[in-house]
Image (tube, rainbow, N blue to C red; front, side, top):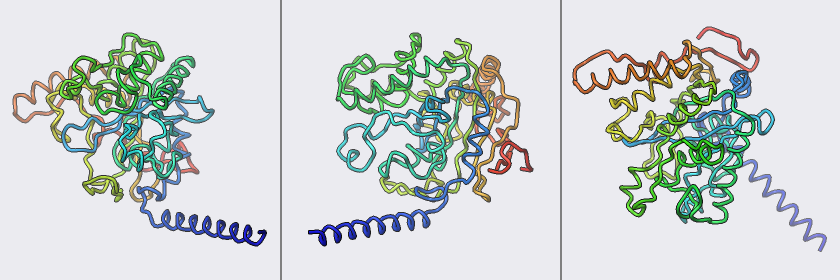
Amino acid sequence: MMTRCVAKATLRATWCLATALLFAAHAAAADFGSKGGPEPANIDAIAGVLRQDPYDLELLISFGTSKGGSAGHLALAIRDRVPGEEIVHSANFYADRAPGHQTDFYTDDLMVRIPKMEYLFGTTSSLGDKASFGLDFGEVYKRSVIGVRVYGVPTREKEALAAYFGRINDDYHARARNTEYHDREVKYDYLRLNCAKTIGMAFKLGAGYRGLEVESARLFSGRRVVAAANANVPTEMAMKLLKEWNARGYGLGVVLYRKYEGSTYVDPHEEEKVAFKDLPNRFPSVLSRDFRKEQGHYEDFDNLFAMYVLFNMGKYGVRVNDRTKLLEIGKGKRPMAYPEAARLATESARSDSRDFLKGVPFQPRGTVIGAPTDDTPLAVSGDEAGKRTAP
């Protein structure tokens, strides 16, 4: 009996060692910017520099990666509920009860909780092997992300938001139906209970933003065309929240986390095998006459306003240096406060949308977020965090 136990223990230890060596070999073989591959060596240094500003929340608006009609993704980072950490709360695209998703993807929660630096720059996930690279973690290897920072938010409001996300998870686990925020089973639905709606409802019902407009597809909800017309869209929800925060006297600022353009990773679950570097990196469109247009061809007032106001409020740009594989922070212009940024964005978007309709060449008055002038690189390494060096 003793010999058999020792043999089993030895076999188990050998199997564990083999698994660890296989994982290590896979990680070593993976390219930079790929799942399981190396990460920028100065993530902690960059996080320290960015955290010098005393913001409380960061709304994370992810660019779209499909051609035409690409709405992107919306998530919310809440700071310092865990000391020294920012936790991203993000609706789980795969928590929709689809059998294939249950097998191949992380579906334990509807609202996943992810450390912000992992969400942006990680190549392995604290959620486990089933987490989706480029969505649950490692976003910048797949698309750009805009961070709207919010200053002066009371602690009770942050606690209420986190509690409401927890309540949504409880309802998901219990398969609850007909809640105050959703009129059918609580699970992810691209049109009816998506990333923008979960974020919006947390602010409206959890944090008490009673005037915040969150769309509902209750009427004729069986017809997907009606549901689509009433869907909550990340960019539109972001613009609504900007107004709400400004009305409450909260400070606002914007960080652009640029896409790393060199990722050769191909998602094995996607039917179309396209490397991340070759996917569109498209500002997430509002529902408008622009929605089916390709990247770089927005002409609608609402899209132009959103891109212009976020550029006007921009304070930092963060990117991966393709040569050094380190993160760099850029600071290339004076950020505007929201009222000034919105006023100028309105004037520019109104003028530019009219000129686009004329169909003749012209020089746009506004600048879109993500434009080359958006940030001047400022190298920051682990040894010299915060010091300016040559671009």
